[in-house]
Image 1 (tube, rainbow, N blue to C red):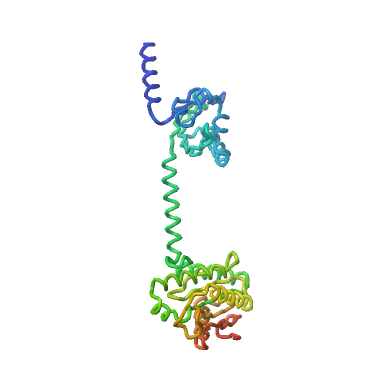
Image 2: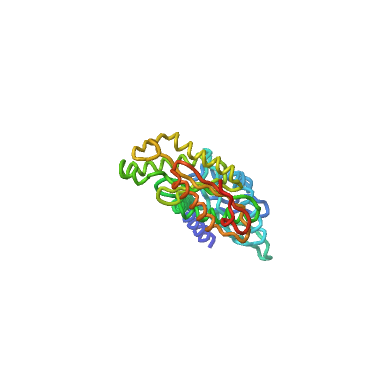
Length: 323
């Protein structure tokens, strides 16, 4: 009978050590490894004999994972609950491998924790695939809010940002400014230089405007066609006019030829600049429409210029003092 038991044990051991999963056993009382499969050396480089206590397990864990994983596993083991934990294990050559530990808690006849047994699985490829999926989802999300041509935010993102900053301005009682701008005679530019160069022009303008919005919360988007928009939180009209002038300056510095423009030999822009301290009765759409009217005025008055206005109170765009 003893021979049969020994044979059975050897068979089980051979089966365990032939799998890619790494079996192990920890004695709960001494907190030492009673066994760990030889596969551990192939995976991490550490010999089975070097796994003496649970300290060896903890110390060979990535510092960013160690405290959380050790605390979780100890708490689950003390309560007698089977559990799983993912962490990065240190290899002998200084690298890290993602491990999933699947732990079963063994109890004695009195119900006390006697030992922990489990398997370590190499989940590096799974984690790599998960990270690639996260990166892809993040990229798709970025694309859904990014104008594919110019690289600045798109109209969808503008709508979301305006709603958020409008609410922030209402709560804080702070001014919010908007700059709407249009490339002068862009149709004539496209007709003369072609749509490929027209696309390059839009990209060029988009990149220039990014440099005009220099504060962390300043926001630039393509509003549509050859129109762009800037949201300037916490900015009053004089400061917004300065940003608008910086936009004009940055576009001029690009020195983009425009032979078919009626106002200059280089590409120019017209701008509408509006500032408001919104109350809880105000809505963003009438404000955007009012700024759009300022842009129209700038174009009507000869282009290559800006028109600005500021509003306050619940009557908002109806009561403005224009400059």
